[in-house]
Every structure is written in C-alpha cells, then in structure tokens.
Length: 441
Ligand code: SF4
Image (cartoon, rainbow, N blue to C red):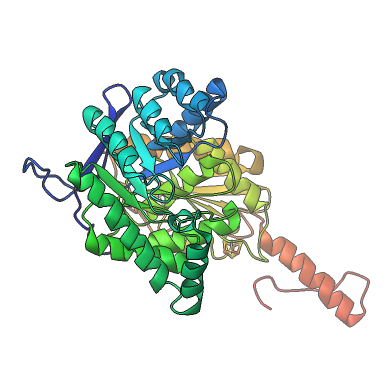
C-alpha cells in the first residue's frame, strides 16, 4: 500500500447532518495544515427525488447502511423543489446530481443541498457555469466536476464525435480518450480558478477498468483536488463488484482516491456495503462490526453452511461494534487451521456446533442452538475487549480440534457410511457386512 496522496481538502455538510471531509494533506488556502480524511463512501438513490417520502426513506436506509454522503438526481424542477422537504428529514450530506440544466443547480443550492455535481459534457456555457460557481461560493458549497467518459465528448456535434471516437478506437484505445478527458477538465477548471473557487472534487469515470485506472492516475499527477472514484455502468452487483473492486482497489492501493461510489444496477445498499468492505479490506477505514470468515465448503460439509453464514451475519448485525473476527467453518477437518486468525469460531458438524473463543473450546451445542450460543459468546468476548480484560487477535491457546467421532459424530460417520456402501457395491456385497477402519482409506 502506498501512502495517501496529499490533496486539498473539501468539506461538505452542516452542523445538523454533520460534516464529511474529503481528501487533505495539503494546507488550506489560509495555510492551515490538513490531514487526509478517511475515504468516504457515497451512493445514489434509485427512486424519484420528487417522491418525497420514498426518497427520504431510501436516503435514511442508505445512511443506516453506512453511507457517508448520498446523491440524488434532480432532472426537473419538481425534484429540486422536493429537496426543501427532503433535506430536513435526513441526517447525511446530500449531493444534487445536475445535468443539462444549470438552473437545477441554482435551485438545489437554494434548497440547501450540500454539494453539487456538474458534468462538463452537458453544462458548459461559461456564463451558466460561473453563475453556479458564484452561488456555491456564497454558501461554501463544493462542486464535483465529473468528466464521465460517456458524456465528455460533445454529443451535439455528431461529426466531431464520430471523428473523436474513430481516432479513439482506431489508434490508441485509451490515450486519445484520456487526452480529451484531461483537456476538457483543464478547460473547465480554468473557469473555476478564474472565480477563485477551489472547493472542487474531480471524478473521471468510465465503464472500462483500465481507462478508470489510467484516467485517475493521470489526473492525480496533474491536479491536487480530491478525487471521487468510480466505475460507471459497472453492471449488476455480481459482475459490477469485480470491475469496481479491481479498478478502485488498484487506485486506492496506490494512494489515489478520497471518496468513492461503487455503482450497481441493484439496490444501492449493496453499493454502500461493498464500498465499506473494500475500504476495510485495504485498512483504509476502521471496521465497526464483526468480520465474518467462512470456509468455502467442500465435499466434507455436514451442514447448510451457506445458510448458516447468512444467519450468523443477520444475528450479529447491529450488535457487534468491534472488528471481532468470527469464523464459521463447515467441518472439523480443516476448519481449525482455516479459522486460525479468528477470535470466535464455530465448527459445524452433524447436527451440532462447537464454539471456540480465542482458541479455547467454550461450548458444544445442538444445531438449533448454534446461533444463540454464538451470539452470546461473541457479545461476552466483546464486553471483555471493551473492559480491557482481553484484546482482539489475542490467542490463549492454539485451537485443538474436537474429537471427530466423540464430540460431533460428524463427517466421519457419513463418510464411513458412504465408504462402506461403496465398498459393498464394488465387492458385489449387499449384506452390509463390510468393515472399514475410520480414518484410513
Ligand atoms: S472447513 Fe471443512 S467443509 Fe469447510 S472447506 Fe474446510 S474442509 Fe471443507
């Protein structure tokens, strides 16, 4: 991991919803030093903004999921009108996503929005941009300049677009596009600098992972504004997750990026959850919930582990505030080794589960009691950590695997049964009298 690249710092929010700082490390314009703020997670609502109650409910749901900032679309005046009623009912900074109509930006600013997103591809009349900048400056509202690949090339001039795209696809797939993105960005930011406006965040999204990495790397070398990372049109969660994590993870590991949005064609809650998980995985945010470890399952499995893992996740949700590592293992064969780094572990066997805390066996319960017992032990461990009695990641003893037959009567019984049946079939013996020594094959 490279250290975070220093940028100017931008602050969004107010005393009621709280302040979220983006970027930092470079002194403020008055010389005050800043330190890089934690990378924040953004998302966007999927419903109509003018549907006030539904919009408030969605924003509050996304806030509860951990979103630091929520963006809403404001294509029509009825959407910016709705902001007046929405903003007082939420507890997170709101960004107005403005395209085509600069007046929507002015209306959103009047309505009390905390940040504006402008697209140089469709709001580029100088006078209009200046009007928005002045309105934001009066209220100390930052602006994100988003030069998305899809809209950066002028659509109105079809011949020009064809020529640009022709060159883009023909010669140097990414180089030409990057040159257009950077040039447009420089031209656009000049308008801001002329107005002595530096409360700027930059984004340069594309649906192509390599373009995203190249664009942000280049922009990071050229500008000192904080960067909002994202892969646009990433697709459904299943595949979009890979695209986004590859692109954003690569940039973040190089110290590039100050806020992010993972975009899915799905419930925005997943964008928040996956964005946070990415930051936790890279050590860029402190986890505030249990970290679930689960085995991938294999032919030794004795329980419906996939359901069990989801049930454990739901059971612990909202009750664990520390990054306690909880392992859910499908059997006792490799489980202990695989659960080595866990604070709390359960090894599921045949209708039973054995629970370990810090390597010590603390319970052996029937299957139907696994969830309650695991929660009870994890809460007790959390209380011990909070009172200073013990620490996360501290092992009292190495995990000693349970006796496979005596304690769990687990996989071996079934394995043995299957092997006997197989041996009988191979020997043409249907009497069921074949013998097998358990543990040897
Ligand atoms: S813990 Fe057991 S069931 Fe899970 S992957 Fe390892 S060996 Fe297979």
